[in-house]
Length: 229
Image (cartoon, rainbow, N blue to C red; front, side, top):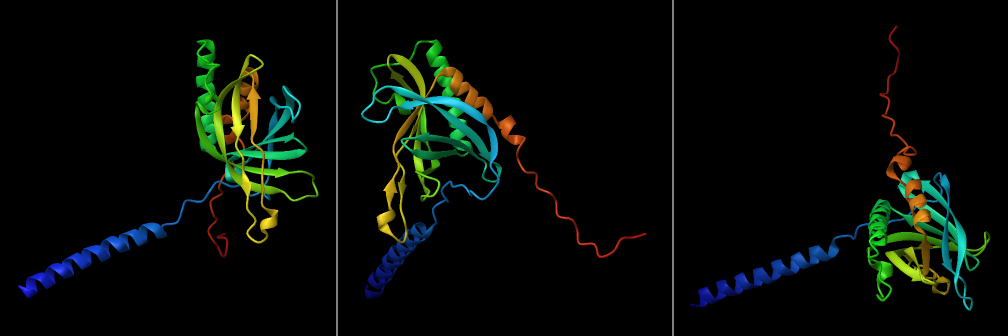
């Protein structure tokens, strides 16, 4: 009887240890790396587009800004560079964000034509989906350039009774690993595009256009010590 109880106790202990070790192994699995951009690599200019953003407080209404569109081929990252409230922003999209932008724009075009846009919903700015991007912001060329990942929302919004395709750059938080006093947040900014403006941006970042700038991988030449004559 004692032997049976002892064996059951050993079995239970082994099961507990096994479950515990599985939990430890799961916790030790590293998280996938977040999307980021290496700024020392070549930046390829694709063109410029226009968009609207909110006027700085306390002003109301929208103001038009010019966006420089560029491509970092080594990181497969599209960059939208613009200025708002004295800051220069570099708003980066990876492949997933670009794909969601184009798909949600197509959906918006259909909704617009079918008059299926709602003015009484609160979540229309994210109605087509969300993704994660990478952001830098800098006040002056001689001041620190902050960087962080940020959420991106794709949808639409009515401003002054007119509908706009909307891309919202959510708040990003820069965390300094050494000096907490340098920690800071970016602003949340909504980018408003007319259909023509959004389609122009989609054309600039089309996969066929970006593929023209992809750096081909050159096969390694075998190490030949002499040439045969």
